[in-house]
Image 1 (cartoon, helix red, strand yellow):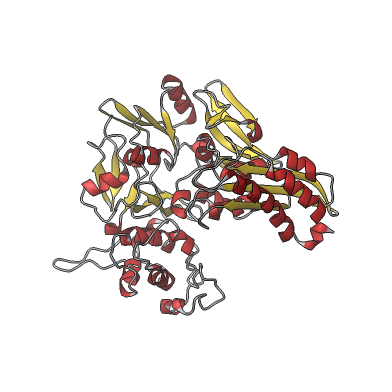
Image 2: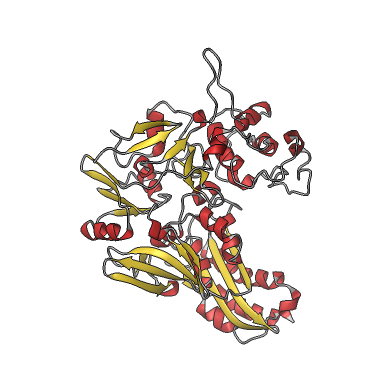
Amino acid sequence: MNAARITVNGKEAPISPAAPHTTALDFLRERGLTGTKEGCAEGECGACSVLVARPGVNKPTDWVAVNACLVPVAALDGQEIITSEGLATAGGPGEPPTLHPVQEEMAVRGGSQCGYCTPGFVCSMAAEYYRPGRCEHAPADPADSTEADGGVDGTDAEHGPNGFDLHALSGNLCRCTGYRPIRDAAFAVGAPAEDDPLAQRREQAPPSPVATEYIRDDSAFLRKSTLDETLELLRERPDAVVVAGSTDWGVEVNIRSRRANCVVAIDRLPELRELRVESDYIEIGAALTLTEIERRLGGDVPLLAGLFPQFASRLIRNGATLGGNLGTGSPIGDSPPVLLALEASVVLAGVDGEREVPLAEYFTGYRQSVRRPGELIRSVRVPLPLSPVTAFHKIAKRRFDDISSVAVAFALDIEDGTVRKARIGLGGVAATPIRAFATEAALEGRPWTAETVGAAARVLRGEGTPMDDHRASSLYRSAMLGQSLLKLHAQTPEAAKS
C-alpha cells in the first residue's frame, strides 16, 4: 500500500516514509535537493518551482512548472519531475556539470543576485523554454533578442522576439528587484538543441496515471483509476478531502496546518479531462488545468481568454482547475463570474447518476452549493452560440497574481444598436458569486446608448451586498460595479452603438 514512487531527475525514489500531507517541496529538500526553496508556502513567490512531465497539448509531453509547496508528494506517485539541479548535464570524471542554456543565460546576464529565487525562476523559465512553438521565430543569434525594450521584430515588452512569454514568470518573485537582467536572460535563450534530452523527452508519452493507495499513521492519500471507483470511494469516505491541483488545499495545509484523514485525488481521472466542442455547447472537463483549457481552446471563447491571463499566475494556472475553483465555492473566485455570464452549467456526478445544474442555481451560501455529499463536478458546459460583446474586468491592487476586490464579467448580444440579451456575472460583492439580474433587465430591449448605460450602471452599483475588508470598502466595490459597465460601453466599437 506504501509502494508509491516518484522519478526525480531521472532517478526513481520511494515516497515513503513521508506523511501523506508532505509537500513535494519538503520531500525534495529532505533528499538534499535544496534548490527548491520555501518562500511564501502559498504559491505566490515561485521559489519552489519544479518541472513535471504532463500530457502535452501540441506534443505527447509538456514540461510544466508547478509550485512544489502546494502539491502533496503523494500526488506525484508514478510521475516524473525535474528540479533546478536536474537541468544541468553531468560532466565527465573530475569535470564540472554543463549548465542548462537557461542557467547559463541567467548567470552571464546577472539574473541571479542573492540567489534565493533563482532556482524557481530557472524552472519556470525552462518550462517556457521547452514550450512547443515558442522558438519558431527565434533569431539566428539569440543575443539579438535583447535589443531594445520591445525586442527586434515588433514584439512588446512582455514577449521577446525569441517567442518567450514573460507571463511564464508571473508567479516568480525576485527579492533583489533583478527583473531586468532576468528578462534579458529570458529573451536571450534560443531553441533547444536537437540532442537536448528534455526536448527529446517531449516526443514520448508522459507517465501513465497510476492508482495510489498511500497510507501512513492512519492518514491516507488515495487515487482511483476511474470515475466510478472514485464515486464509490467518496460514498464510503464522506469525510475525504477532494483535490485536483491542490492550489487551495495546499495553502490550508501549509498556513493553517490543516490535516485530513483521507485525501482523494481526481486530477488524473480521464473522465474529468475531456474537452469537447458540440454543435450547441462546449464541455470542459473539471480536472483540466486552466493552462490546458487556455491552450486547447486557443481563444475560441473570448471571455475565457480574457480571464486566463488575470487568474493568479502561470504557475497556479498550471495546476488549478475549473472544478476546483467552483468546488471551493469562494465568493472571490475569478472563474464563477465569467461562467455565470456565459450561462454555464455544471455536470454533477454521483453513484446514482449525473445531473446538470445551471451555475446561477449552483451556489446556495458562503462556500456552499447544491452539490450533495459524494458528488463531484465532472464538467462545465458552456452553451453555444456565444455572445459577441464580452469583457472581464478584475479590480485588484496588482495587475496580475492577486485576489480580486471585485470581478465583473459581461456577455451581451447587441443588434442594430439595441441590447437583445445581457448576462452579467459578479464576484466579490456577496456571499456567493451572483448574476446581476436587475441590471440585465435594465439593459435588455433598450438602445446601447450612454443614457441607457448610465441608468443601468446606477442599478449595477446596488447589486449584491458588498462589505468592507482589507481589500476594499463596500462603497468602493459598489462604485467599481457601475464604473465597469461605463467602461464596457466606452470600449464597445461604434458599430455596435449605432
